[in-house]
Length: 517
Image (cartoon, rainbow, N blue to C red; front, side, top):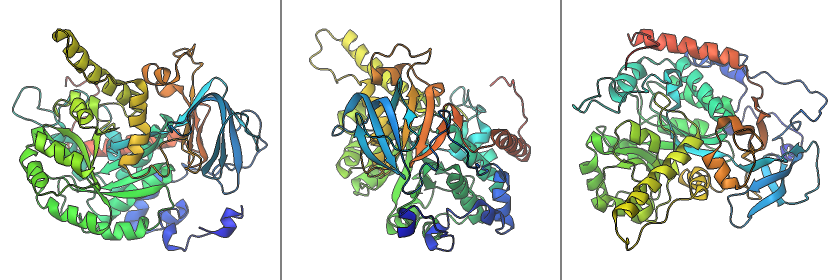
């Protein structure tokens, strides 16, 4: 840390090793040809805002800067930290990027944020999202995971998204997809993401993905997975060492890294070894229809799991493997709506909870379904309740039934458990003094919510992205009163549409807005 920066005198650290991610966008545009192509889509999208006199309609000036303070005043505060508690009306004091205090009647500093009639809570955490697919939104709304020889599988994720589209991505496609997808989730109150990036055809593709995450200004965990389609010349997994050294040498930044190691790919053991040598978490999709159960059982039987593993989906696995996951302290991420829609197998919400594993929630792929966490929370709770309620109806005097999930349970999955699963719970996931200020302010006076009666119930059962009024990441206001700040969305949308048009043409897939499937 820089003492001058801490004292409110910002210094230029662009030549320091840890500044490689945060160097100016202009510097990135001056990089080599491939890097220039990767960043060109971002030119002019993040213009600096001129200083202006502040009024009630302005966000706090210089939010997130060292030494700058502001107070979120008078909100219904749901901290998600049992030691802090909840408040019918309270304030949250932020200095720089951190939360200093939570409680009633805190002294005002600078321009206060009026949160009366609003819900103040930690930002959501998405533990599994393929952001490079943003340009393919809705393409696979009626599709399945793979062609398993059964009906309905002709247009599927494995053949089309990974087999046809992914191999033709250029670095600039990766960049604009990452930026747009990240900003869209900021708009929905998702302040942290694990970006499961399977688009590493070259170092330039990897650099573009990281640059897109950095330029979005969101807390992001870069998931270094494979080159989908195994494009010749890719350097996965060996390039992980360069990537970690160049971009993730500091723990004091918004970006961190996870190693992807898909067990259905030949040679996955090398990726697990590289990840563990680098001190990274090792993540993998674990999906029954892919025939992964025997390999997963073999890993379980040989005690290969550890607390550094993050397993996504976990459908169709044996009781023995589940117990090994539990015993190892590995994390489990569920993407319930996708699992139900794409034939991954029944989401294992009952199994997870029966073992005492607290899952996190994730959105997975926008080519099929929306990327907001309200959908994830409602779906997880509804499915678990459907299972248990049916048990109650089918059994006379049932001897014992699992407890029904509550709205607060799924809120915890979408905040604290997500932060824990990504090893970020020391920084985010709750409104705890000392943690970084990843905060969302939700409109509880909106027509779809008012009158407010129960805070957790309102957030989970009634709200959606239109209720996300203000979003703060590491103290910096990124969305203010319903509008993303410092972003030229019209330009971004044009660049994303241009990327989409290129991808369809390069993959030789017709663009048909009304295709039957």
